[in-house]
Image 1 (cartoon, rainbow, N blue to C red):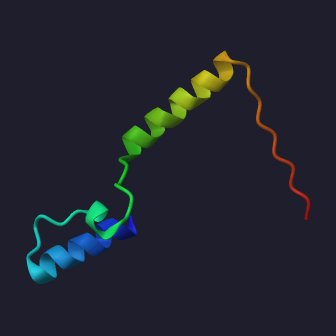
Image 2: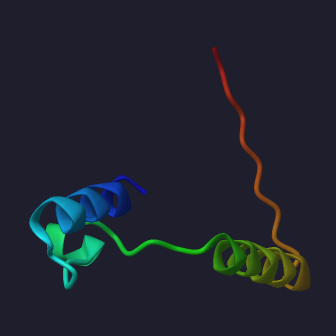
Image 3: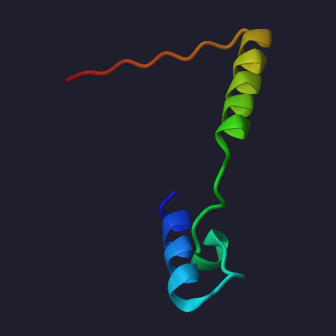
Length: 59
């Protein structure tokens, strides 16, 4: 997200329309729809293979 903000800033300031977040070594932005689709697919696969993930926190 920060990469997208910086790219937008540099595009406006220096007229660099070709600049992308990947050019500044930031990971590409992921749309929320794609992120939720990936999460749903992961949950289906875990359920299909009967995988459980437990997390124990000790404070």
